Amino acid sequence: MKLVTRKFLLATTLAMVSLSAFALKDDTNQPINIVSDNQSLDMENSVVTFTDNVVITQGSILIKANKVVITRPPENSGKKETVEAFGTPVTFHQLLDDGKPVDGKANKVHYDLGAEF
Image (cartoon, rainbow, N blue to C red; front, side, top):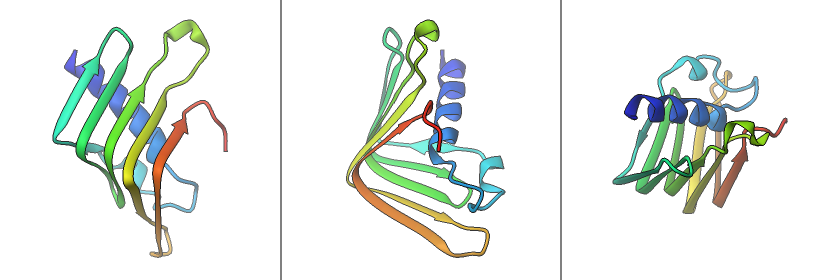
């Protein structure tokens, strides 16, 4: 169970925090770490929830939130995973290849892995 959850989290978090080609190229090759005070797993509905002081890091990427919910729909549903982060605010930081930072914040961040940019 733990290995499956880790692979799921790795894949969905990698997709969530990957920016465009302007981001540090090495970031996507770095390990992803998710730390929070509390975690819960709803295997029946394929939902993983991280709460209280959630910190996601990967290379130069740093995301902080109060709560992160990762949902994986049934395989044959045609839907993709979604990641939602909630905070007051959710903050995002990443370095670009030229060394300039990208910073953002919002009270809610929704990322649909099926959406194309």
